[in-house]
Length: 180
Figure 1 (cartoon, rainbow, N blue to C red):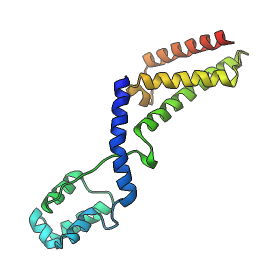
Figure 2 (tube, rainbow, N blue to C red; figure 1 turned 45 degrees about the vertical axis):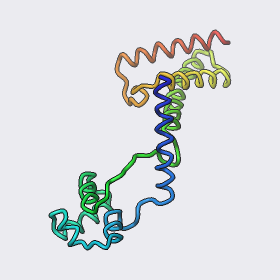
Figure 3 (cartoon, one colour; figure 1 turned 90 degrees about the vertical axis):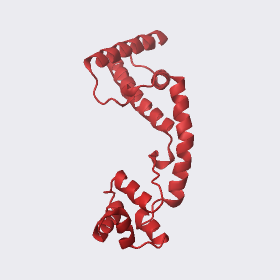
Figure 4 (cartoon, rainbow, N blue to C red; figure 1 turned 120 degrees about the horizontal axis):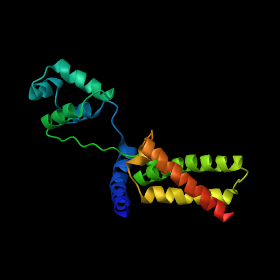
């Protein structure tokens, strides 16, 4: 699983450049199609002829791009007709990295699990101190990251997963009781 996090870090390095470009420039208000077409001094009619479309369809396409209602295929075809290529990326929001997103999700899951365990233990008058809870949460986060898999993003658990989680919670409770 260390290889998986290494891959995530390598992708993060690549995405950082895309994030910087997007932050510096973003998309032009009239959209990329119109911006490039105008920069090339190409008329709507000329672009339409290159694509075998009507002028009205090019105007619709330019408007659709502004409204985020254009397909990648259409953008690729238009870019090609203007002797350009379509380049796109999906990057994490707000300057985050993929690793940050994974850690945040692992923390969310750990918080939910540990709070359930802590609540159960407090009902049994076996409440834990905050440091013990924090240590168990940190261990669970580390484990979730080290054993990264698709389950990190599962919203609903299967019966088998619920049993595994229940076993894990029972193990955590036993560990916490031993430390008391």
